[in-house]
Amino acid sequence: MEQLLITADLDDYSVGLTCKANLNDFSGFGEAWFNLDDVTVFCKNLKQLASKMTGSVKLVGSKSKLDGSEYLETFSIRCYVLSASKLNGIIGVHVTLADSPYTGCRNNEVRKLSGELQVRNHKIEEFSASLLRLISNSQSETVLSGGKGI
Image (cartoon, rainbow, N blue to C red; front, side):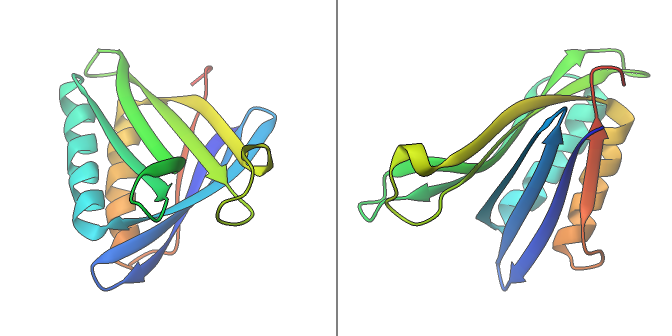
């Protein structure tokens, strides 16, 4: 089974999201900090994507160097329409996760996972609501399951 398991660490106006992914025989881990408002907007846009079945949405977290330039995407979710049927549509969820052992490590030491889940649009709406509950601290984790054989 292909799935994403997301947990949250809340802090005032920000949230640290941690994702563990299992995609076929591959697994990975990544985490990033986001403004709460950015995650809320992502969830609302995700719900709209699932209901209108048009467009794309993304939530991208990365690490930055001291000069502010980004160097490592550690947690990203990009969602887009694969089959636009409003009743039984399919949304592609591309996840990229990376875990570096320490700041400034060599590129070869970074562990990365990148892959796609295919999810029915009604499951995306449920995931959006579940992610909102996660960042409001009313549940401890959220899971998104999918796969090619949906």
